Length: 441
Ligand code: ASP
Image (cartoon, rainbow, N blue to C red):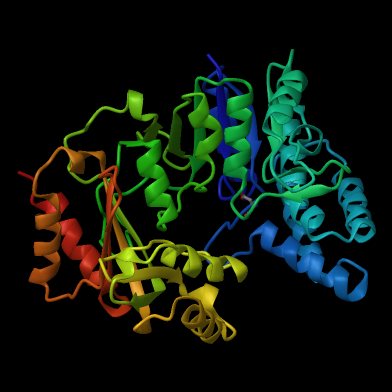
Protein backbone atom coordinates (compact mmCIF):
# COMPACT_ATOMS: atom_id res chain seq x y z
CA UNK A 1 0.00 0.00 0.00
CA UNK A 2 1.41 3.40 -1.00
CA UNK A 3 -0.03 6.76 -0.05
CA UNK A 4 1.20 10.07 -1.38
CA UNK A 5 0.55 12.92 1.06
CA UNK A 6 0.51 16.55 0.08
CA UNK A 7 0.66 19.10 2.88
CA UNK A 8 -0.63 22.61 2.18
CA UNK A 9 0.75 25.96 3.35
CA UNK A 10 -0.98 26.11 6.73
CA UNK A 11 0.30 22.61 7.59
CA UNK A 12 3.82 23.86 6.82
CA UNK A 13 3.45 27.23 8.56
CA UNK A 14 5.74 26.77 11.58
CA UNK A 15 7.50 24.31 13.85
CA UNK A 16 4.35 23.27 15.67
CA UNK A 17 2.43 22.50 12.49
CA UNK A 18 5.41 20.57 11.14
CA UNK A 19 5.33 18.39 14.25
CA UNK A 20 1.74 17.57 13.39
CA UNK A 21 2.89 16.69 9.88
CA UNK A 22 5.46 14.30 11.32
CA UNK A 23 2.86 12.67 13.61
CA UNK A 24 0.56 12.16 10.63
CA UNK A 25 3.29 10.70 8.43
CA UNK A 26 4.61 8.48 11.22
CA UNK A 27 1.15 7.16 12.02
CA UNK A 28 0.99 5.16 8.79
CA UNK A 29 3.90 3.39 7.09
CA UNK A 30 2.05 3.62 3.77
CA UNK A 31 2.61 7.41 3.81
CA UNK A 32 5.87 7.22 1.92
CA UNK A 33 6.01 10.13 -0.47
CA UNK A 34 5.39 13.62 0.84
CA UNK A 35 4.78 16.67 -1.35
CA UNK A 36 4.91 20.04 0.36
CA UNK A 37 3.74 23.60 -0.20
CA UNK A 38 5.66 26.64 0.99
CA UNK A 39 4.83 27.79 4.53
CA UNK A 40 1.52 29.65 4.55
CA UNK A 41 -0.20 31.87 7.07
CA UNK A 42 0.21 31.15 10.79
CA UNK A 43 -2.66 33.46 11.73
CA UNK A 44 -5.05 35.86 9.99
CA UNK A 45 -3.09 38.75 8.49
CA UNK A 46 0.19 36.80 8.40
CA UNK A 47 2.18 36.63 5.14
CA UNK A 48 2.44 33.59 2.88
CA UNK A 49 6.00 32.72 1.90
CA UNK A 50 5.05 32.48 -1.79
CA UNK A 51 3.58 36.01 -1.73
CA UNK A 52 6.76 37.29 -0.06
CA UNK A 53 8.79 35.60 -2.78
CA UNK A 54 6.78 37.29 -5.52
CA UNK A 55 7.56 40.56 -3.71
CA UNK A 56 11.20 39.50 -3.67
CA UNK A 57 11.14 38.93 -7.43
CA UNK A 58 9.85 42.49 -7.84
CA UNK A 59 12.60 43.81 -5.58
CA UNK A 60 15.24 42.01 -7.63
CA UNK A 61 13.78 43.37 -10.83
CA UNK A 62 13.84 46.92 -9.45
CA UNK A 63 17.12 46.98 -7.56
CA UNK A 64 19.03 43.87 -8.58
CA UNK A 65 18.94 42.64 -4.97
CA UNK A 66 16.66 40.77 -2.60
CA UNK A 67 15.14 43.10 0.00
CA UNK A 68 12.90 43.32 3.03
CA UNK A 69 10.43 40.69 1.79
CA UNK A 70 13.23 38.13 1.53
CA UNK A 71 14.34 38.99 5.09
CA UNK A 72 10.90 37.89 6.22
CA UNK A 73 11.25 34.65 4.26
CA UNK A 74 14.59 34.04 5.97
CA UNK A 75 13.32 34.69 9.45
CA UNK A 76 10.41 32.31 8.94
CA UNK A 77 12.69 29.48 7.82
CA UNK A 78 15.17 30.24 10.59
CA UNK A 79 12.47 30.00 13.20
CA UNK A 80 11.14 26.72 11.75
CA UNK A 81 14.60 25.14 11.74
CA UNK A 82 15.19 26.41 15.26
CA UNK A 83 11.81 25.20 16.59
CA UNK A 84 12.46 21.73 15.18
CA UNK A 85 16.02 21.66 16.54
CA UNK A 86 17.47 20.66 13.18
CA UNK A 87 21.15 20.45 12.44
CA UNK A 88 20.69 21.97 9.02
CA UNK A 89 22.98 24.90 8.13
CA UNK A 90 20.10 27.25 7.49
CA UNK A 91 22.23 30.39 7.16
CA UNK A 92 24.26 28.93 4.36
CA UNK A 93 21.14 27.65 2.64
CA UNK A 94 19.42 31.04 2.79
CA UNK A 95 22.52 32.86 1.61
CA UNK A 96 22.91 30.52 -1.34
CA UNK A 97 19.22 30.93 -2.16
CA UNK A 98 19.54 34.74 -2.14
CA UNK A 99 22.51 34.54 -4.48
CA UNK A 100 20.70 32.22 -6.85
CA UNK A 101 17.61 34.44 -6.88
CA UNK A 102 19.73 37.47 -7.76
CA UNK A 103 21.59 35.53 -10.44
CA UNK A 104 18.60 33.82 -12.08
CA UNK A 105 16.40 36.95 -12.08
CA UNK A 106 13.37 34.80 -12.80
CA UNK A 107 9.99 35.22 -11.13
CA UNK A 108 9.23 31.50 -11.36
CA UNK A 109 12.58 30.54 -9.89
CA UNK A 110 12.15 32.97 -7.00
CA UNK A 111 8.58 31.86 -6.29
CA UNK A 112 9.60 28.20 -6.29
CA UNK A 113 12.12 28.64 -3.48
CA UNK A 114 9.39 28.47 -0.81
CA UNK A 115 8.59 24.88 -1.73
CA UNK A 116 12.25 24.05 -2.29
CA UNK A 117 13.34 25.21 1.17
CA UNK A 118 10.24 23.74 2.82
CA UNK A 119 10.95 20.34 1.29
CA UNK A 120 14.61 20.40 2.38
CA UNK A 121 13.60 21.23 5.94
CA UNK A 122 10.83 18.63 6.01
CA UNK A 123 13.09 15.91 4.59
CA UNK A 124 15.66 16.64 7.26
CA UNK A 125 13.03 16.62 10.00
CA UNK A 126 11.43 13.37 8.85
CA UNK A 127 14.74 11.67 8.10
CA UNK A 128 13.55 11.20 4.53
CA UNK A 129 15.28 11.64 1.18
CA UNK A 130 14.90 14.95 -0.68
CA UNK A 131 14.02 14.74 -4.37
CA UNK A 132 14.13 18.06 -6.22
CA UNK A 133 11.10 18.67 -8.44
CA UNK A 134 13.47 20.39 -10.87
CA UNK A 135 14.98 17.01 -11.72
CA UNK A 136 11.78 15.03 -12.07
CA UNK A 137 8.86 17.28 -13.05
CA UNK A 138 9.43 18.22 -16.69
CA UNK A 139 7.65 20.66 -18.96
CA UNK A 140 8.04 20.75 -22.74
CA UNK A 141 9.17 23.89 -24.51
CA UNK A 142 5.57 25.13 -24.78
CA UNK A 143 5.37 24.91 -21.01
CA UNK A 144 3.05 21.88 -20.99
CA UNK A 145 3.75 19.08 -18.57
CA UNK A 146 5.68 16.26 -20.24
CA UNK A 147 3.67 13.70 -18.32
CA UNK A 148 5.20 10.42 -19.43
CA UNK A 149 8.76 11.63 -18.94
CA UNK A 150 7.85 13.11 -15.56
CA UNK A 151 6.22 9.89 -14.36
CA UNK A 152 9.18 7.78 -15.33
CA UNK A 153 11.72 10.19 -13.79
CA UNK A 154 9.75 10.25 -10.55
CA UNK A 155 9.52 6.45 -10.45
CA UNK A 156 13.21 6.17 -11.17
CA UNK A 157 14.25 8.64 -8.48
CA UNK A 158 11.99 7.16 -5.81
CA UNK A 159 13.15 3.61 -6.43
CA UNK A 160 14.65 2.16 -3.27
CA UNK A 161 13.70 5.16 -1.12
CA UNK A 162 11.49 4.25 1.81
CA UNK A 163 10.40 7.81 2.28
CA UNK A 164 10.97 10.95 0.25
CA UNK A 165 9.93 14.58 0.29
CA UNK A 166 9.34 16.43 -2.98
CA UNK A 167 8.65 20.16 -3.27
CA UNK A 168 5.34 21.03 -4.91
CA UNK A 169 4.46 23.86 -7.31
CA UNK A 170 7.32 23.69 -9.81
CA UNK A 171 9.33 21.70 -12.31
CA UNK A 172 11.73 22.60 -15.10
CA UNK A 173 11.70 23.42 -18.80
CA UNK A 174 13.90 21.58 -21.33
CA UNK A 175 16.70 24.13 -20.79
CA UNK A 176 16.65 23.39 -17.06
CA UNK A 177 15.08 26.68 -15.96
CA UNK A 178 12.38 26.54 -13.33
CA UNK A 179 8.72 26.87 -14.22
CA UNK A 180 5.89 26.96 -11.68
CA UNK A 181 2.32 25.78 -12.02
CA UNK A 182 -0.41 28.34 -11.39
CA UNK A 183 -1.04 29.41 -7.79
CA UNK A 184 -2.03 26.57 -5.53
CA UNK A 185 -0.22 24.21 -7.89
CA UNK A 186 1.32 21.96 -5.24
CA UNK A 187 -1.96 20.06 -5.39
CA UNK A 188 -1.10 19.23 -9.00
CA UNK A 189 2.43 18.15 -8.02
CA UNK A 190 0.97 15.80 -5.40
CA UNK A 191 -1.36 14.29 -7.99
CA UNK A 192 1.54 13.83 -10.41
CA UNK A 193 3.60 11.98 -7.82
CA UNK A 194 0.60 9.82 -6.89
CA UNK A 195 0.07 8.96 -10.54
CA UNK A 196 3.76 8.25 -11.12
CA UNK A 197 4.02 5.70 -8.33
CA UNK A 198 0.47 4.40 -8.91
CA UNK A 199 -0.39 5.17 -5.30
CA UNK A 200 -3.39 3.55 -3.69
CA UNK A 201 -4.44 6.90 -2.30
CA UNK A 202 -3.57 10.56 -2.74
CA UNK A 203 -4.04 12.26 0.63
CA UNK A 204 -4.32 16.01 0.45
CA UNK A 205 -3.80 17.50 3.94
CA UNK A 206 -5.15 21.00 4.41
CA UNK A 207 -6.80 23.14 7.09
CA UNK A 208 -10.44 22.18 6.48
CA UNK A 209 -12.11 18.82 6.88
CA UNK A 210 -12.94 18.44 3.21
CA UNK A 211 -15.54 19.97 0.95
CA UNK A 212 -18.66 21.59 2.29
CA UNK A 213 -21.96 21.52 0.46
CA UNK A 214 -21.71 25.28 0.04
CA UNK A 215 -19.64 28.32 0.98
CA UNK A 216 -19.60 28.69 4.79
CA UNK A 217 -19.36 32.47 4.40
CA UNK A 218 -22.84 32.37 2.90
CA UNK A 219 -24.51 29.53 4.83
CA UNK A 220 -23.21 29.08 8.38
CA UNK A 221 -21.95 25.51 9.01
CA UNK A 222 -23.14 23.81 5.86
CA UNK A 223 -23.08 20.02 5.67
CA UNK A 224 -19.78 18.36 4.80
CA UNK A 225 -19.55 16.30 1.62
CA UNK A 226 -18.32 12.77 2.43
CA UNK A 227 -17.83 11.59 -1.15
CA UNK A 228 -17.58 13.28 -4.52
CA UNK A 229 -16.87 12.02 -7.99
CA UNK A 230 -14.00 13.55 -9.96
CA UNK A 231 -16.53 15.13 -12.27
CA UNK A 232 -18.50 16.70 -9.46
CA UNK A 233 -15.27 17.97 -7.98
CA UNK A 234 -14.26 19.52 -11.27
CA UNK A 235 -17.58 21.36 -11.57
CA UNK A 236 -17.51 22.57 -7.98
CA UNK A 237 -13.90 23.66 -7.91
CA UNK A 238 -14.14 25.36 -11.27
CA UNK A 239 -17.04 27.34 -9.88
CA UNK A 240 -15.18 28.53 -6.84
CA UNK A 241 -15.13 25.77 -4.21
CA UNK A 242 -11.39 26.09 -3.73
CA UNK A 243 -10.25 23.33 -1.43
CA UNK A 244 -8.22 21.74 -4.20
CA UNK A 245 -6.66 23.12 -7.40
CA UNK A 246 -9.15 22.37 -10.16
CA UNK A 247 -6.48 20.82 -12.42
CA UNK A 248 -5.16 18.42 -9.82
CA UNK A 249 -7.56 15.63 -10.65
CA UNK A 250 -6.28 14.92 -14.16
CA UNK A 251 -3.20 12.86 -13.31
CA UNK A 252 -4.93 10.74 -10.65
CA UNK A 253 -8.13 10.29 -12.61
CA UNK A 254 -6.29 8.51 -15.40
CA UNK A 255 -5.18 5.88 -12.93
CA UNK A 256 -8.37 5.69 -10.83
CA UNK A 257 -6.54 6.87 -7.72
CA UNK A 258 -8.90 8.27 -5.08
CA UNK A 259 -8.10 11.61 -3.43
CA UNK A 260 -8.79 12.03 0.27
CA UNK A 261 -8.99 15.57 1.64
CA UNK A 262 -7.95 15.59 5.30
CA UNK A 263 -7.52 18.24 7.97
CA UNK A 264 -4.03 18.43 9.53
CA UNK A 265 -5.54 20.18 12.53
CA UNK A 266 -8.34 17.64 13.04
CA UNK A 267 -6.86 14.41 11.71
CA UNK A 268 -9.68 12.38 13.26
CA UNK A 269 -12.28 14.02 10.99
CA UNK A 270 -13.40 11.84 8.13
CA UNK A 271 -12.71 14.36 5.33
CA UNK A 272 -13.94 14.09 1.75
CA UNK A 273 -13.05 11.27 -0.58
CA UNK A 274 -13.01 11.93 -4.32
CA UNK A 275 -13.58 8.89 -6.47
CA UNK A 276 -13.79 7.95 -10.12
CA UNK A 277 -17.41 7.70 -11.28
CA UNK A 278 -17.00 3.90 -11.49
CA UNK A 279 -16.31 3.64 -7.75
CA UNK A 280 -18.67 6.36 -6.70
CA UNK A 281 -21.75 5.22 -4.82
CA UNK A 282 -24.85 7.37 -4.89
CA UNK A 283 -25.18 8.74 -1.39
CA UNK A 284 -28.89 9.57 -1.56
CA UNK A 285 -28.54 13.32 -1.93
CA UNK A 286 -30.02 14.75 -5.11
CA UNK A 287 -27.55 17.61 -4.98
CA UNK A 288 -23.98 17.06 -3.82
CA UNK A 289 -22.88 20.66 -3.58
CA UNK A 290 -23.50 24.24 -4.58
CA UNK A 291 -20.80 26.67 -5.71
CA UNK A 292 -20.72 29.95 -7.52
CA UNK A 293 -18.92 33.08 -8.56
CA UNK A 294 -19.82 36.69 -9.12
CA UNK A 295 -18.89 39.21 -11.79
CA UNK A 296 -19.76 37.76 -15.14
CA UNK A 297 -20.94 39.65 -18.20
CA UNK A 298 -23.58 38.31 -20.57
CA UNK A 299 -23.34 39.24 -24.22
CA UNK A 300 -26.75 38.74 -25.80
CA UNK A 301 -27.08 38.54 -29.58
CA UNK A 302 -30.38 38.44 -31.42
CA UNK A 303 -30.96 37.90 -35.10
CA UNK A 304 -34.03 36.63 -36.94
CA UNK A 305 -33.43 33.25 -38.56
CA UNK A 306 -30.11 32.90 -36.72
CA UNK A 307 -30.76 29.18 -36.62
CA UNK A 308 -30.59 28.92 -40.40
CA UNK A 309 -27.47 31.02 -40.83
CA UNK A 310 -24.59 28.64 -41.34
CA UNK A 311 -21.43 29.68 -39.54
CA UNK A 312 -23.04 32.30 -37.27
CA UNK A 313 -21.50 30.91 -34.08
CA UNK A 314 -18.24 30.26 -35.84
CA UNK A 315 -17.91 33.90 -36.91
CA UNK A 316 -18.61 35.16 -33.39
CA UNK A 317 -16.17 32.69 -31.89
CA UNK A 318 -13.52 33.76 -34.38
CA UNK A 319 -13.73 37.28 -32.91
CA UNK A 320 -13.36 35.86 -29.38
CA UNK A 321 -10.41 33.81 -30.47
CA UNK A 322 -8.72 36.69 -32.25
CA UNK A 323 -8.66 38.60 -28.94
CA UNK A 324 -7.92 35.60 -26.70
CA UNK A 325 -11.24 35.94 -24.88
CA UNK A 326 -12.41 32.95 -22.92
CA UNK A 327 -16.11 32.37 -22.30
CA UNK A 328 -17.81 30.09 -19.79
CA UNK A 329 -21.14 29.13 -21.37
CA UNK A 330 -23.18 29.72 -24.50
CA UNK A 331 -26.87 29.32 -23.70
CA UNK A 332 -28.86 29.77 -26.88
CA UNK A 333 -32.39 30.03 -28.26
CA UNK A 334 -33.64 29.82 -31.85
CA UNK A 335 -32.88 33.42 -32.72
CA UNK A 336 -30.76 34.34 -29.71
CA UNK A 337 -27.40 33.39 -28.44
CA UNK A 338 -25.65 34.55 -25.31
CA UNK A 339 -22.08 34.28 -24.17
CA UNK A 340 -21.20 34.29 -20.50
CA UNK A 341 -17.80 35.89 -19.99
CA UNK A 342 -15.79 36.57 -16.86
CA UNK A 343 -15.95 40.38 -16.58
CA UNK A 344 -12.19 40.47 -15.94
CA UNK A 345 -11.70 39.46 -19.58
CA UNK A 346 -13.47 42.59 -20.77
CA UNK A 347 -11.30 45.24 -19.19
CA UNK A 348 -9.44 47.94 -21.11
CA UNK A 349 -12.01 48.69 -23.79
CA UNK A 350 -12.52 45.05 -24.85
CA UNK A 351 -16.32 45.45 -24.70
CA UNK A 352 -16.24 48.12 -27.40
CA UNK A 353 -13.84 46.10 -29.55
CA UNK A 354 -16.03 43.00 -29.35
CA UNK A 355 -19.15 45.01 -30.10
CA UNK A 356 -17.63 46.57 -33.20
CA UNK A 357 -16.12 43.39 -34.58
CA UNK A 358 -19.10 41.14 -33.86
CA UNK A 359 -21.44 43.63 -35.51
CA UNK A 360 -19.20 43.62 -38.56
CA UNK A 361 -18.93 39.82 -38.58
CA UNK A 362 -22.59 38.76 -38.19
CA UNK A 363 -24.70 41.93 -38.40
CA UNK A 364 -27.04 41.02 -35.50
CA UNK A 365 -30.47 42.68 -35.02
CA UNK A 366 -29.40 43.50 -31.51
CA UNK A 367 -26.29 43.17 -29.41
CA UNK A 368 -26.32 43.94 -25.69
CA UNK A 369 -24.02 43.45 -22.72
CA UNK A 370 -25.34 42.86 -19.17
CA UNK A 371 -22.86 43.21 -16.34
CA UNK A 372 -22.88 42.10 -12.72
CA UNK A 373 -24.15 38.59 -13.22
CA UNK A 374 -23.37 35.83 -10.72
CA UNK A 375 -23.35 32.16 -11.68
CA UNK A 376 -24.48 29.45 -9.30
CA UNK A 377 -23.73 25.81 -10.07
CA UNK A 378 -25.91 23.15 -8.51
CA UNK A 379 -23.97 19.92 -8.87
CA UNK A 380 -24.73 16.25 -8.28
CA UNK A 381 -25.00 12.94 -10.09
CA UNK A 382 -28.20 12.46 -8.12
CA UNK A 383 -29.97 15.04 -10.29
CA UNK A 384 -30.05 12.70 -13.27
CA UNK A 385 -32.04 10.17 -11.24
CA UNK A 386 -34.59 12.44 -9.67
CA UNK A 387 -37.42 13.86 -11.68
CA UNK A 388 -38.35 17.41 -10.73
CA UNK A 389 -34.97 18.68 -9.57
CA UNK A 390 -35.05 21.71 -11.80
CA UNK A 391 -38.64 22.49 -10.77
CA UNK A 392 -37.54 22.45 -7.13
CA UNK A 393 -34.55 24.63 -7.95
CA UNK A 394 -36.49 27.25 -9.86
CA UNK A 395 -39.37 27.25 -7.37
CA UNK A 396 -36.90 27.89 -4.58
CA UNK A 397 -35.45 30.83 -6.49
CA UNK A 398 -38.85 32.18 -7.56
CA UNK A 399 -40.10 31.99 -3.97
CA UNK A 400 -37.55 34.57 -2.87
CA UNK A 401 -38.50 36.81 -5.80
CA UNK A 402 -35.19 36.52 -7.64
CA UNK A 403 -35.14 36.73 -11.41
CA UNK A 404 -33.10 34.07 -13.21
CA UNK A 405 -31.03 35.73 -15.94
CA UNK A 406 -29.80 32.57 -17.61
CA UNK A 407 -29.94 28.80 -17.29
CA UNK A 408 -27.53 26.19 -18.55
CA UNK A 409 -27.80 22.49 -17.94
CA UNK A 410 -24.89 20.26 -18.89
CA UNK A 411 -26.00 17.36 -21.07
CA UNK A 412 -24.66 14.90 -18.49
CA UNK A 413 -27.28 16.25 -16.06
CA UNK A 414 -24.51 16.64 -13.55
CA UNK A 415 -25.07 20.33 -13.08
CA UNK A 416 -27.51 23.14 -13.58
CA UNK A 417 -26.07 26.61 -13.77
CA UNK A 418 -28.21 29.63 -13.11
CA UNK A 419 -27.27 33.26 -13.58
CA UNK A 420 -28.69 35.89 -11.22
CA UNK A 421 -27.79 39.51 -10.55
CA UNK A 422 -24.70 39.86 -8.37
CA UNK A 423 -26.78 41.51 -5.65
CA UNK A 424 -28.98 38.41 -5.37
CA UNK A 425 -26.12 35.93 -5.27
CA UNK A 426 -25.91 35.17 -1.55
CA UNK A 427 -29.63 34.90 -0.90
CA UNK A 428 -30.10 32.67 -3.92
CA UNK A 429 -27.37 30.31 -2.70
CA UNK A 430 -29.05 30.24 0.71
CA UNK A 431 -32.46 29.46 -0.80
CA UNK A 432 -31.05 26.65 -2.96
CA UNK A 433 -29.18 25.17 0.00
CA UNK A 434 -32.38 25.30 2.10
CA UNK A 435 -34.29 23.50 -0.61
CA UNK A 436 -31.90 20.62 -1.18
CA UNK A 437 -30.22 20.17 2.18
CA UNK A 438 -32.80 21.25 4.75
CA UNK A 439 -35.94 19.84 3.18
CA UNK A 440 -34.76 16.30 2.64
CA UNK A 441 -37.63 13.90 2.24
N1 ASP B 1 2.92 28.02 -2.63
C1 ASP B 1 2.20 28.10 -3.85
C2 ASP B 1 1.08 29.11 -3.71
O1 ASP B 1 0.94 29.74 -2.69
C3 ASP B 1 1.71 26.78 -4.32
C4 ASP B 1 0.88 25.99 -3.34
O2 ASP B 1 0.90 26.24 -2.15
O3 ASP B 1 0.18 25.09 -3.78
O4 ASP B 1 0.35 29.29 -4.64
